Amino acid sequence: MKAKFLFKLLVLLVTLLNMQLASADTTKPLTLVLDWFTNPDHAPIYVAQQQGFFKQQGIEVNIINPADPSDGSKWVAAGKADLAVTYQPQLVIQVSQGLPLIRIATLIDNPLNCLAVSADSNIKKIADLKGKTIGYSSGAVDKATLNIMLEKNGLTINDIKLINVRYNLTQALLSGKVDAVTGIMRNFELIEMELVGKPARAFYVEENGMPSYDELVIVANHNHLHDSRLPKFVNALQQGAQYLKAHPENSWLQFAKNHPELNNELNHQAWAATIPYFSVAPANYDPVRYEKLALFLQQQSLIQCIPTLTNYVAKFQ
Image (tube, rainbow, N blue to C red; front, top):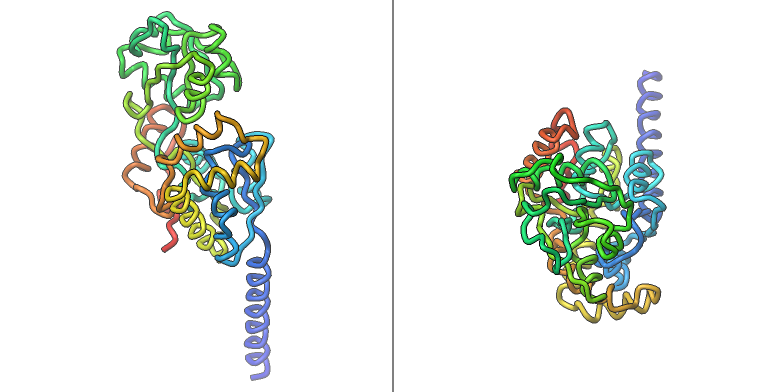
């Protein structure tokens, strides 16, 4: 009888301790690591912060700019950060490699990536790239995307020359170092080229063989889904996206005031150009589209097995 009483007491103490730990965790600020430096792609996050939507949900969010775009997901997987902004293709690859990551929200629900050439070049269609030089900045996904775009238009990777120009895509194209660039963003670099008087001609990935996907998603550690702050974050993000679409210019003015280093014509135009791509229901996702992208990545030998969807995509009700 005494042993039974002691066991019940121990269970009660453990339960209370767990409740205290959970309560303590929810009082801490969430750490959110961006995919790159602060820019208009992150507008709903900053609008949620500007308008006090995170505070209304009872949470704080510390936003971190990483030194490398891949840092965020790695930190979340290692438990060194709560959330990270990443790309849907990279998420699938990392999950297939065993990282405990799970998508909890969508920031941008359509591709921004495209293949671009100078508008005044003689390259009018992708098939005209035969024998040309194409610059790229990152690895496997960009190459796989380019590969399918070429195949869709009767070419192979052997019909072109690839050059890694790091993150100097715009400059490589403007200087004539390459004939085309892949991995360029339609909401930023295309505007940048327009502003310097050298507009580009763009070919969109989703129109040339690449399955459509979410350009930017927000991931958490799969083992931390019980964290009560996560659905609150998603709710505030939705409020931010909806407010942004209803008040685009006022949101920009506040953002520009808070980030004077970004207050220029390029970022102003990019802010407006990106608004149509933001998800106003970030908790939602299209399972069919996710499965199609995973199949594409498998066909391109970027993953061996397609991960179970519920293992890397969550939706808070």
